[in-house]
Length: 304
Image 1 (spheres, rainbow, N blue to C red):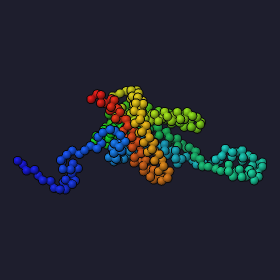
Image 2: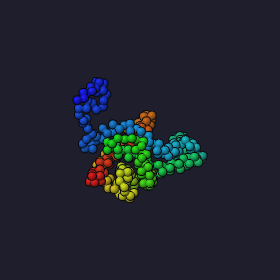
Image 3: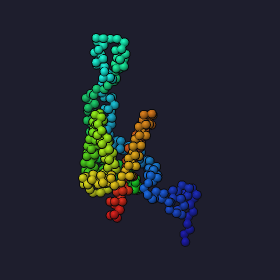
Image 4: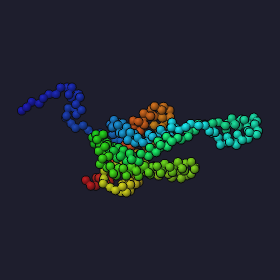
C-alpha cells in the first residue's frame, strides 16, 4: 500500500480547502433575505467595481449630454434675477429716490446665464446615441448580475460580451423602447413640475413602477426565448406579484443615490469616486437580487 505523502504545514495554512476533512459550510444557503443580499454583495465587490466601469463606458453618449449641460460649451451672459427689474428700471428713468434706489438694489441684481451655441446642440444630439448602447449594456450587465445572484463563477468580460452577442437583436430593440419610455416619463415630470401640476406625482409613480419593471425586463430577455411584448407584460406582472421585495430594492437604490448626492454636495471627490466605482452596478444588483428568485420560483423551478 502506497504511503500517503505528508503535507508541509504551510500547505495546510495556505490551502483554501483547509485539511480536506470536511466540506466548508455554505453560509449563503437559505432564504434570499437582506443578510444574504449584503453578504453576496461584499463577496463580489471587485466584480461590481469592474461592472460599474463597463456601465459607464458602455453608455458613453451620456458624457456628451453632461458636458453640454455644464455650460462649458455655451456663451456666458448676464440677466436680471428678478422679474421686477424691467418695470423698476423704467420707473427710475422718470423718478429716482431713496425708495426706488433701495428696491433697485434688491431687484437689480444680475445673474449669469448661458446661451447655447452650435456645439451645445451638437453634443446634445450626440447624446441620442444612447439609443444604440443602452440595450446592449443592460443585457450584459444583467447577465453578469444573474450569475452573481445564482452564485455561479463569473468571467466578467467574456460573460458580458457573450450575452450581448447572443441577444443582439432583442437587446437593441428593447434598449430603444427602454430609452423612449424613460425619456417620455422624464419629460412629463419636467413639464408638470414647471407648470406646478399635481400630475407630476402621477408621473413619478409611473417612473417608479417602470424602474421596478426594469429589474425583470433584461433578466427575462437573457433567460427565456420570449417576444418583446411578452417580456414587458411578464415584467409588469412580476412588478405587482413581487411587490414587497421590489419596494425594498427600490428603497435601497434611492438610498444609494441619496448617499452619493450628499457626498457630492459636501465633498465632491468622494461623490465622484462613488459614482465611478459602485453606484450603478450596486443599484442594478439590488434589482437583480429582488427579481431573479421570484423568476426562478415561478418560471424556472416548475420546469425542472
